[in-house]
Length: 336
Image (tube, rainbow, N blue to C red):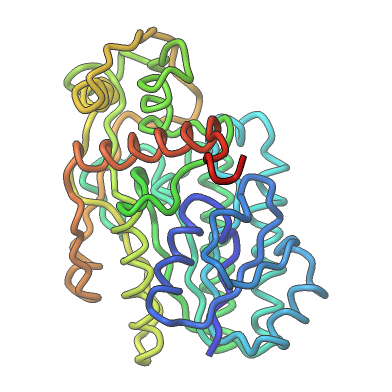
């Protein structure tokens, strides 16, 4: 049995590939390297450079390797960018997922795990939000993911494909052993941006909106460590392999932190008091979104290990320092 990981050279995907390799799974990767890096993969994991929308190439890949499960990460993920370029997001996230699903059905793939997002909920009326809450996306990014969820559900009903949809809340942190982390240039994730400011890569950090209906006026988010998120994928795959039913699960901790609270945590952990600038709201940002993750805990037995903001920040900060050392690495005396 072989697992295909799309977007496996990216931030979350590379963590998943490492976890699968650690578990002794046969895993292959498809990535167009638009934001990912070959170096993020464990040694010996096969990489095919290409797009999920290339039906001929994907079909050949699935058959050659006997793929029976797909974990689909490949997507564009920046909410403000989706507002500026909605058609690009619908092409890359929705149309390409439709093509991948068709290839999977034709190749007889049995299990499909889809990387979705809390953005499908929009600005929920109640938090923590459950999986049964209304899905009213506020951005083309959220809409593109919701459309993919609908296609997956319908394909499963028609063709017998089994699936799990995982709706991520705010993913952060890095591999605790330092093997991989968020390395995308120009990343917009708050903890990534703040740790870059802490190590001197950014002159300041911008806070977008201070007039939200939250305790300190800034957006509140549920931050989940990337390693715990990968563990959610692992239990989802085990569930499907054991004959479990298709389902949708939130992936978060059930409590949130404001933008200002996260910035203070990064300052506290790093010991650096970097500048912070206040800016206007960005389009597509809900005020507060926090997961009710009782379903995945109860049904799949998911039990997170890194539910601590300072730990998440500490791992992210260590990864930033690792990236900086790699940039400025000098040859050892023996190799000169």
